[in-house]
Length: 389
Image (cartoon, rainbow, N blue to C red):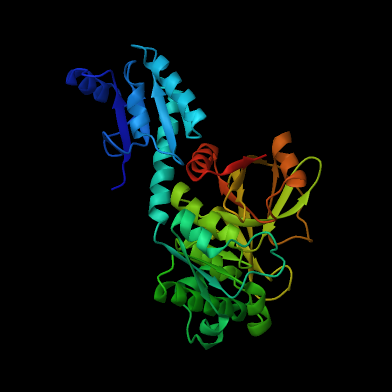
Protein backbone atom coordinates (compact mmCIF):
# COMPACT_ATOMS: atom_id res chain seq x y z
CA UNK A 1 0.00 0.00 0.00
CA UNK A 2 1.40 3.39 -0.99
CA UNK A 3 2.28 5.82 1.81
CA UNK A 4 3.66 9.36 1.92
CA UNK A 5 7.08 9.64 3.55
CA UNK A 6 7.28 12.22 6.34
CA UNK A 7 10.46 13.42 8.07
CA UNK A 8 10.17 15.18 11.44
CA UNK A 9 12.90 17.75 12.09
CA UNK A 10 14.19 19.00 15.45
CA UNK A 11 17.44 20.28 16.94
CA UNK A 12 20.34 17.85 17.33
CA UNK A 13 19.96 15.35 20.20
CA UNK A 14 16.30 16.23 20.77
CA UNK A 15 14.55 13.82 23.12
CA UNK A 16 12.60 10.95 21.56
CA UNK A 17 9.55 12.09 23.54
CA UNK A 18 9.42 15.22 21.37
CA UNK A 19 8.96 13.10 18.25
CA UNK A 20 6.44 10.78 19.91
CA UNK A 21 4.28 13.72 20.99
CA UNK A 22 4.51 15.23 17.52
CA UNK A 23 3.28 12.05 15.85
CA UNK A 24 0.20 12.03 18.08
CA UNK A 25 -0.45 15.73 17.52
CA UNK A 26 -0.17 15.26 13.75
CA UNK A 27 -2.75 12.47 13.43
CA UNK A 28 -5.30 14.96 12.05
CA UNK A 29 -2.84 15.74 9.27
CA UNK A 30 -1.29 12.33 8.66
CA UNK A 31 -3.66 9.32 8.84
CA UNK A 32 -1.68 6.22 9.80
CA UNK A 33 -2.80 4.31 6.72
CA UNK A 34 -1.46 7.00 4.38
CA UNK A 35 1.91 8.05 5.84
CA UNK A 36 5.08 6.63 7.32
CA UNK A 37 7.67 8.52 9.33
CA UNK A 38 11.16 8.18 7.85
CA UNK A 39 14.71 9.48 8.18
CA UNK A 40 15.56 9.46 4.45
CA UNK A 41 14.00 10.21 1.07
CA UNK A 42 10.94 12.08 2.42
CA UNK A 43 8.07 13.72 0.56
CA UNK A 44 7.23 16.05 3.43
CA UNK A 45 9.37 17.94 5.96
CA UNK A 46 7.72 18.85 9.28
CA UNK A 47 9.65 21.31 11.44
CA UNK A 48 9.17 20.73 15.15
CA UNK A 49 11.86 23.18 16.31
CA UNK A 50 14.56 25.48 15.09
CA UNK A 51 18.15 24.39 14.68
CA UNK A 52 17.16 21.66 12.23
CA UNK A 53 17.83 23.36 8.92
CA UNK A 54 21.00 21.50 7.95
CA UNK A 55 19.18 18.16 8.04
CA UNK A 56 17.16 19.22 5.00
CA UNK A 57 20.31 19.99 3.01
CA UNK A 58 21.31 16.36 3.52
CA UNK A 59 17.88 14.96 2.58
CA UNK A 60 16.43 17.15 -0.17
CA UNK A 61 17.16 16.25 -3.79
CA UNK A 62 17.03 18.32 -7.00
CA UNK A 63 14.12 17.91 -9.40
CA UNK A 64 11.78 16.98 -6.55
CA UNK A 65 8.79 18.67 -4.95
CA UNK A 66 8.54 18.93 -1.16
CA UNK A 67 5.82 19.99 1.21
CA UNK A 68 7.34 22.02 4.07
CA UNK A 69 5.13 22.21 7.16
CA UNK A 70 5.73 24.52 10.11
CA UNK A 71 4.02 25.91 13.21
CA UNK A 72 4.45 29.04 15.39
CA UNK A 73 6.08 26.99 18.18
CA UNK A 74 9.76 26.57 19.09
CA UNK A 75 11.19 28.47 16.12
CA UNK A 76 9.62 25.98 13.73
CA UNK A 77 8.53 28.69 11.30
CA UNK A 78 11.90 30.42 11.42
CA UNK A 79 13.69 27.20 10.47
CA UNK A 80 11.19 26.44 7.71
CA UNK A 81 11.61 29.94 6.26
CA UNK A 82 15.38 29.50 6.02
CA UNK A 83 14.90 26.13 4.33
CA UNK A 84 12.31 27.51 1.91
CA UNK A 85 14.78 30.22 0.87
CA UNK A 86 17.51 27.60 0.39
CA UNK A 87 15.20 25.44 -1.74
CA UNK A 88 14.25 28.42 -3.90
CA UNK A 89 17.92 29.30 -4.40
CA UNK A 90 18.65 25.72 -5.46
CA UNK A 91 15.65 25.35 -7.80
CA UNK A 92 13.95 22.78 -5.57
CA UNK A 93 10.17 23.09 -5.82
CA UNK A 94 8.37 23.38 -2.49
CA UNK A 95 5.39 24.80 -0.63
CA UNK A 96 5.63 26.21 2.91
CA UNK A 97 2.36 25.79 4.80
CA UNK A 98 0.92 26.16 8.30
CA UNK A 99 0.43 22.95 10.27
CA UNK A 100 -2.76 24.23 11.92
CA UNK A 101 -4.67 25.35 8.83
CA UNK A 102 -7.54 23.20 7.44
CA UNK A 103 -6.18 23.85 3.95
CA UNK A 104 -3.03 21.93 4.90
CA UNK A 105 -5.12 18.84 5.62
CA UNK A 106 -6.61 19.16 2.13
CA UNK A 107 -3.15 19.68 0.63
CA UNK A 108 -1.74 16.55 2.28
CA UNK A 109 -4.76 14.55 1.06
CA UNK A 110 -4.23 15.88 -2.48
CA UNK A 111 -0.51 15.09 -2.34
CA UNK A 112 -1.31 11.55 -1.25
CA UNK A 113 -3.85 11.08 -4.07
CA UNK A 114 -1.50 12.48 -6.72
CA UNK A 115 1.60 10.59 -5.61
CA UNK A 116 -0.37 7.36 -5.32
CA UNK A 117 -1.87 7.95 -8.76
CA UNK A 118 1.49 8.66 -10.38
CA UNK A 119 2.99 5.55 -8.78
CA UNK A 120 0.10 3.42 -10.02
CA UNK A 121 0.65 4.68 -13.59
CA UNK A 122 4.18 3.31 -13.75
CA UNK A 123 4.34 0.17 -15.86
CA UNK A 124 0.91 0.68 -17.44
CA UNK A 125 0.30 0.51 -21.18
CA UNK A 126 -2.12 2.33 -23.46
CA UNK A 127 -3.08 1.37 -26.98
CA UNK A 128 -3.08 3.63 -30.04
CA UNK A 129 -5.34 2.02 -32.63
CA UNK A 130 -4.35 3.38 -36.02
CA UNK A 131 -2.48 6.70 -36.13
CA UNK A 132 -3.19 10.13 -34.64
CA UNK A 133 -5.64 12.01 -36.87
CA UNK A 134 -4.03 14.36 -39.39
CA UNK A 135 -5.55 17.48 -37.86
CA UNK A 136 -3.99 16.89 -34.43
CA UNK A 137 -0.94 18.95 -35.26
CA UNK A 138 -0.27 19.91 -31.62
CA UNK A 139 -1.38 16.81 -29.73
CA UNK A 140 1.13 14.02 -30.41
CA UNK A 141 3.62 13.15 -27.66
CA UNK A 142 6.82 11.21 -28.31
CA UNK A 143 6.31 7.72 -26.80
CA UNK A 144 9.83 7.79 -25.30
CA UNK A 145 8.97 10.99 -23.43
CA UNK A 146 5.80 9.42 -22.03
CA UNK A 147 7.77 6.42 -20.80
CA UNK A 148 10.57 8.55 -19.38
CA UNK A 149 8.34 11.00 -17.51
CA UNK A 150 5.42 8.80 -16.45
CA UNK A 151 6.60 5.22 -16.88
CA UNK A 152 3.74 4.54 -19.32
CA UNK A 153 4.23 2.52 -22.51
CA UNK A 154 2.49 3.23 -25.82
CA UNK A 155 1.43 0.19 -27.85
CA UNK A 156 0.59 0.95 -31.49
CA UNK A 157 -2.06 -1.33 -33.01
CA UNK A 158 -2.97 -1.24 -36.72
CA UNK A 159 -6.68 -1.43 -37.57
CA UNK A 160 -5.90 -4.60 -39.48
CA UNK A 161 -5.48 -6.37 -36.13
CA UNK A 162 -8.76 -5.16 -34.67
CA UNK A 163 -11.31 -6.35 -37.30
CA UNK A 164 -14.71 -5.27 -35.90
CA UNK A 165 -16.59 -6.78 -38.86
CA UNK A 166 -15.33 -10.25 -37.91
CA UNK A 167 -16.92 -10.17 -34.44
CA UNK A 168 -19.72 -12.72 -34.33
CA UNK A 169 -21.57 -11.57 -31.22
CA UNK A 170 -22.15 -8.61 -28.93
CA UNK A 171 -22.56 -8.82 -25.16
CA UNK A 172 -26.18 -8.52 -24.02
CA UNK A 173 -25.35 -5.78 -21.51
CA UNK A 174 -24.04 -3.57 -24.34
CA UNK A 175 -27.24 -3.96 -26.35
CA UNK A 176 -29.48 -3.32 -23.35
CA UNK A 177 -27.44 -0.33 -22.13
CA UNK A 178 -27.50 1.55 -25.43
CA UNK A 179 -31.16 1.37 -26.36
CA UNK A 180 -32.11 2.73 -29.77
CA UNK A 181 -34.71 2.47 -32.49
CA UNK A 182 -31.98 1.03 -34.72
CA UNK A 183 -30.67 -2.23 -33.24
CA UNK A 184 -28.59 -2.70 -36.37
CA UNK A 185 -26.58 0.45 -35.63
CA UNK A 186 -26.16 -0.56 -31.98
CA UNK A 187 -25.07 -4.05 -32.92
CA UNK A 188 -22.33 -2.79 -35.24
CA UNK A 189 -21.18 -0.34 -32.55
CA UNK A 190 -21.14 -3.30 -30.17
CA UNK A 191 -18.89 -5.24 -32.51
CA UNK A 192 -16.45 -2.32 -32.48
CA UNK A 193 -16.56 -2.41 -28.67
CA UNK A 194 -15.92 -6.16 -28.59
CA UNK A 195 -13.01 -5.90 -31.03
CA UNK A 196 -11.31 -3.10 -29.10
CA UNK A 197 -11.99 -4.78 -25.75
CA UNK A 198 -10.25 -7.93 -27.00
CA UNK A 199 -7.17 -5.88 -27.88
CA UNK A 200 -7.26 -4.30 -24.42
CA UNK A 201 -7.33 -7.74 -22.80
CA UNK A 202 -4.80 -9.48 -25.06
CA UNK A 203 -2.26 -6.66 -24.92
CA UNK A 204 -2.85 -5.90 -21.24
CA UNK A 205 -3.79 -2.28 -21.86
CA UNK A 206 -5.00 0.14 -19.19
CA UNK A 207 -6.34 2.66 -21.72
CA UNK A 208 -6.89 3.08 -25.46
CA UNK A 209 -7.28 5.82 -28.05
CA UNK A 210 -8.68 5.17 -31.52
CA UNK A 211 -8.21 6.78 -34.93
CA UNK A 212 -11.95 6.69 -35.54
CA UNK A 213 -12.36 8.08 -39.07
CA UNK A 214 -10.50 5.12 -40.59
CA UNK A 215 -13.13 2.96 -38.93
CA UNK A 216 -15.94 5.00 -40.47
CA UNK A 217 -14.46 4.59 -43.93
CA UNK A 218 -13.88 0.85 -43.52
CA UNK A 219 -17.01 -0.25 -41.62
CA UNK A 220 -19.50 2.60 -42.05
CA UNK A 221 -19.80 2.93 -38.27
CA UNK A 222 -18.14 4.80 -35.39
CA UNK A 223 -16.41 3.89 -32.14
CA UNK A 224 -18.31 6.42 -29.99
CA UNK A 225 -20.46 3.96 -28.03
CA UNK A 226 -17.65 1.47 -27.65
CA UNK A 227 -15.30 4.10 -26.27
CA UNK A 228 -17.97 5.39 -23.89
CA UNK A 229 -18.59 1.84 -22.63
CA UNK A 230 -14.88 1.14 -22.19
CA UNK A 231 -14.53 4.29 -20.06
CA UNK A 232 -17.53 3.11 -18.04
CA UNK A 233 -15.75 -0.25 -17.63
CA UNK A 234 -12.74 1.56 -16.10
CA UNK A 235 -10.61 1.72 -19.27
CA UNK A 236 -10.06 5.37 -20.29
CA UNK A 237 -10.89 5.47 -23.99
CA UNK A 238 -10.40 8.43 -26.31
CA UNK A 239 -10.84 9.09 -30.00
CA UNK A 240 -8.98 10.62 -32.95
CA UNK A 241 -5.76 9.02 -31.71
CA UNK A 242 -5.21 12.05 -29.46
CA UNK A 243 -2.18 11.21 -27.31
CA UNK A 244 -2.31 14.39 -25.17
CA UNK A 245 -5.90 13.62 -24.23
CA UNK A 246 -5.09 9.94 -23.67
CA UNK A 247 -2.36 10.73 -21.15
CA UNK A 248 -4.58 13.30 -19.45
CA UNK A 249 -7.41 10.78 -19.21
CA UNK A 250 -5.09 8.22 -17.63
CA UNK A 251 -3.84 10.79 -15.13
CA UNK A 252 -7.40 11.79 -14.28
CA UNK A 253 -8.49 8.19 -13.78
CA UNK A 254 -5.61 7.43 -11.40
CA UNK A 255 -5.64 10.71 -9.46
CA UNK A 256 -9.34 11.65 -9.30
CA UNK A 257 -10.81 8.19 -9.71
CA UNK A 258 -12.88 9.58 -12.62
CA UNK A 259 -12.28 9.06 -16.34
CA UNK A 260 -12.55 12.57 -17.87
CA UNK A 261 -14.61 13.50 -20.89
CA UNK A 262 -12.48 14.49 -23.88
CA UNK A 263 -14.25 17.38 -25.61
CA UNK A 264 -13.80 19.86 -28.43
CA UNK A 265 -13.65 23.57 -27.71
CA UNK A 266 -16.63 24.03 -30.02
CA UNK A 267 -17.15 27.78 -29.60
CA UNK A 268 -15.81 30.64 -27.50
CA UNK A 269 -17.83 33.83 -27.22
CA UNK A 270 -17.44 36.82 -24.92
CA UNK A 271 -19.40 35.20 -22.08
CA UNK A 272 -18.86 31.44 -22.07
CA UNK A 273 -17.42 28.40 -23.84
CA UNK A 274 -19.19 25.50 -25.55
CA UNK A 275 -17.60 22.05 -25.25
CA UNK A 276 -18.90 19.13 -27.29
CA UNK A 277 -18.02 15.57 -28.27
CA UNK A 278 -19.74 12.27 -29.01
CA UNK A 279 -17.76 9.89 -26.75
CA UNK A 280 -18.56 11.01 -23.20
CA UNK A 281 -18.23 8.27 -20.55
CA UNK A 282 -21.84 7.31 -19.92
CA UNK A 283 -21.49 7.51 -16.13
CA UNK A 284 -20.99 11.28 -16.51
CA UNK A 285 -24.47 11.83 -17.98
CA UNK A 286 -27.83 11.61 -16.19
CA UNK A 287 -29.58 10.39 -19.34
CA UNK A 288 -28.82 10.13 -23.01
CA UNK A 289 -30.12 9.22 -26.43
CA UNK A 290 -28.26 7.44 -29.22
CA UNK A 291 -27.91 9.41 -32.44
CA UNK A 292 -25.63 9.37 -35.45
CA UNK A 293 -22.08 10.70 -35.25
CA UNK A 294 -21.98 14.47 -35.86
CA UNK A 295 -19.29 14.87 -38.54
CA UNK A 296 -20.24 11.83 -40.62
CA UNK A 297 -23.95 11.34 -39.81
CA UNK A 298 -23.14 7.64 -39.56
CA UNK A 299 -22.82 5.04 -36.85
CA UNK A 300 -23.98 5.77 -33.30
CA UNK A 301 -23.04 8.45 -30.79
CA UNK A 302 -24.18 9.71 -27.39
CA UNK A 303 -26.28 12.83 -26.92
CA UNK A 304 -26.21 13.11 -23.13
CA UNK A 305 -27.13 15.51 -20.35
CA UNK A 306 -23.92 16.04 -18.38
CA UNK A 307 -24.31 15.72 -14.61
CA UNK A 308 -23.09 18.48 -12.31
CA UNK A 309 -22.86 22.25 -12.03
CA UNK A 310 -19.14 22.79 -11.40
CA UNK A 311 -16.47 21.20 -13.60
CA UNK A 312 -12.69 21.01 -13.66
CA UNK A 313 -11.31 21.51 -17.17
CA UNK A 314 -7.67 20.74 -17.94
CA UNK A 315 -5.21 20.05 -20.76
CA UNK A 316 -1.54 19.03 -20.97
CA UNK A 317 0.79 19.90 -23.84
CA UNK A 318 2.66 17.66 -26.28
CA UNK A 319 6.02 18.19 -24.53
CA UNK A 320 4.67 17.10 -21.12
CA UNK A 321 5.91 20.42 -19.77
CA UNK A 322 2.78 22.59 -19.49
CA UNK A 323 -0.73 22.29 -18.10
CA UNK A 324 -3.86 24.42 -18.03
CA UNK A 325 -6.62 23.92 -15.50
CA UNK A 326 -9.65 25.92 -14.47
CA UNK A 327 -13.16 25.76 -13.07
CA UNK A 328 -16.21 26.16 -15.30
CA UNK A 329 -19.74 26.74 -14.05
CA UNK A 330 -22.68 25.50 -16.13
CA UNK A 331 -24.48 28.10 -18.21
CA UNK A 332 -27.77 27.47 -19.97
CA UNK A 333 -27.37 27.57 -23.71
CA UNK A 334 -29.46 26.51 -26.72
CA UNK A 335 -28.46 23.21 -28.30
CA UNK A 336 -26.21 23.72 -31.31
CA UNK A 337 -26.79 21.72 -34.47
CA UNK A 338 -23.24 22.59 -35.52
CA UNK A 339 -21.37 20.73 -32.78
CA UNK A 340 -20.93 17.16 -31.56
CA UNK A 341 -23.90 15.49 -29.90
CA UNK A 342 -23.13 15.86 -26.17
CA UNK A 343 -22.70 19.52 -25.29
CA UNK A 344 -21.79 21.56 -22.21
CA UNK A 345 -21.61 25.35 -21.91
CA UNK A 346 -19.37 26.66 -19.12
CA UNK A 347 -18.51 30.07 -17.74
CA UNK A 348 -14.95 30.71 -16.50
CA UNK A 349 -13.12 33.49 -14.73
CA UNK A 350 -11.91 36.30 -16.98
CA UNK A 351 -8.29 35.05 -16.91
CA UNK A 352 -9.22 31.44 -17.62
CA UNK A 353 -11.60 32.51 -20.39
CA UNK A 354 -8.78 34.49 -22.01
CA UNK A 355 -6.59 31.37 -22.09
CA UNK A 356 -8.88 29.73 -24.67
CA UNK A 357 -8.38 32.52 -27.22
CA UNK A 358 -4.83 33.67 -26.39
CA UNK A 359 -2.82 30.71 -25.15
CA UNK A 360 -4.59 27.35 -25.67
CA UNK A 361 -2.48 24.18 -25.56
CA UNK A 362 -4.69 22.52 -28.17
CA UNK A 363 -8.31 21.82 -29.08
CA UNK A 364 -9.35 18.86 -26.97
CA UNK A 365 -9.75 19.54 -23.26
CA UNK A 366 -10.63 17.12 -20.46
CA UNK A 367 -13.63 17.68 -18.22
CA UNK A 368 -14.54 16.11 -14.86
CA UNK A 369 -17.34 17.04 -12.45
CA UNK A 370 -16.18 18.71 -9.24
CA UNK A 371 -13.22 20.83 -8.19
CA UNK A 372 -9.82 19.16 -8.57
CA UNK A 373 -7.67 22.27 -8.96
CA UNK A 374 -5.59 21.47 -5.88
CA UNK A 375 -4.83 17.98 -7.19
CA UNK A 376 -3.77 19.40 -10.55
CA UNK A 377 -1.58 22.07 -8.94
CA UNK A 378 0.17 19.39 -6.88
CA UNK A 379 0.53 17.18 -9.96
CA UNK A 380 2.04 20.09 -11.91
CA UNK A 381 4.62 20.67 -9.16
CA UNK A 382 5.50 16.99 -8.90
CA UNK A 383 5.96 16.62 -12.66
CA UNK A 384 7.62 20.00 -13.18
CA UNK A 385 4.83 21.33 -15.41
CA UNK A 386 4.48 25.05 -16.07
CA UNK A 387 0.95 26.18 -15.17
CA UNK A 388 -0.49 28.09 -18.13
CA UNK A 389 -3.16 30.78 -17.80
